[in-house]
Length: 322
Image (cartoon, rainbow, N blue to C red):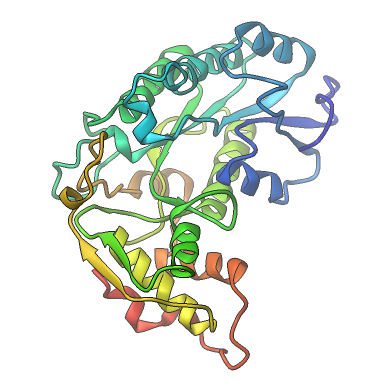
């Protein structure tokens, strides 16, 4: 996070980032940006995306080249209880930001989720497929998407799924932590999606932002990004334990279970694999396999075994876990 606001002289072009303390926001702040660009990531206490006056003030005090919104309420279970913050952060806030950006002629990028879909598809969801969320979290994100579309014609909504990284709380870190105190793990094997590296997602957001800034004819609309290849949570957990074992870290067996065996107040889509073809077509972005992305996360979280010089991303075991 860089202090201050961008100059209106044009010497520095500021990227306003909301949600800078999350997985993707942290990765965005760590990226190297081209000369002349500065990322400003105010904390929630400094700028709440639900505070219209504060948002207007930020746009009056600084000239922004692009706004990227990664802020979200992501507690899926808690969202079912009718927590007011869900709609404020996931629906109202993005609309306010998109509208403020539009008034300043600023392109707006909004991060969304695969949970806008109901999981009844039998092939990867395209960005223009109808949405039908199963839970309150997904419904709030779908409503936020609609407000963004209405508020700012120069927008990109980027849906993603199953984000993991060395930062903050996520599935991979949970698996590694649980393996330290349990003799086996039980992980659902009937939910299928695509794993996403926060670092890869941040790099994609950067590419989109720079295109929007430099090219007035840049494509806009809704796109999907996730690492290549479908997986179940069980498959990801097994791959995580295999990676831990290669690094001489504790590894335990992972048993598959059904979603029904773990009662939940929030329904999850059984299939939410995202199609990234339109992103590749319009922005030239080709996601790498999720196995390779996972290995990079594990390299950051676990020490590499002294005798391990193999290219983990080519490990044949990792492609056939489902």
